[in-house]
Image (cartoon, rainbow, N blue to C red; front, side, top):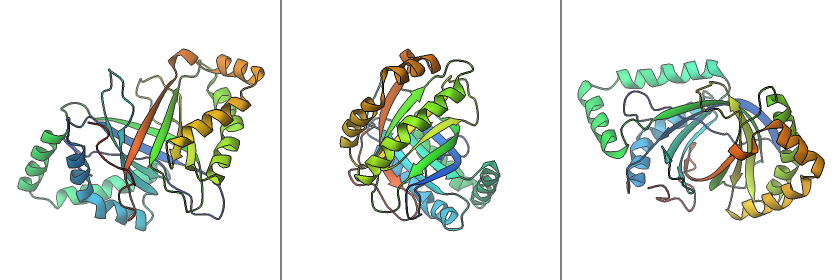
Length: 269
């Protein structure tokens, strides 16, 4: 995986391979950056030069999955529009991954490294790189549905209410998510909590792996049914509703030989 000032890390979510909807735990490392206007295709091509390396790590079980995405929805203060991800079992697996990538770096000449750095500087905005490492609790379908988009919700639990918010998620979202998987609208869904606290303030991030944007309509329809007055009261007690934010991302590549997601393109210039 290419990088401007070191190793550009990323991680996200892995699809289950079991015969039914399955709950999984793992570690997600996401690397965010801002691609210069009109250069998303160049960013994807640049990163995919390490495709064989990452697919090899999937094949030998070092990582569960990896991929690339770009923003569909934007805010004026966006500091990034591009993400790379890798999903692993735990921090021990991160150690193995980093060691393997270190070998790749050492195999390159100084001239090769300088050339890669120069190319990256043309594609990525200086100083825009940042990482998030999260604990991942996910539910995925078995085969079939291929995700094209990721719908992300960011939450800020009140102090001492982190566990209560997690419990609310587990009671509300899995029944809806499993229903939408059965309908072919989702390939998976899950919840992130910080493994590294970087001062951003968020305590929970939910995500839906969607086969189409129409999944958002169905999700809102079903989740609204579950929001009884009692549940709404608990939600307000558990997190700062005013700070909640949503975003939509387009998947540009899924690792493991799957190629680019259908409908990919320059959605995040």
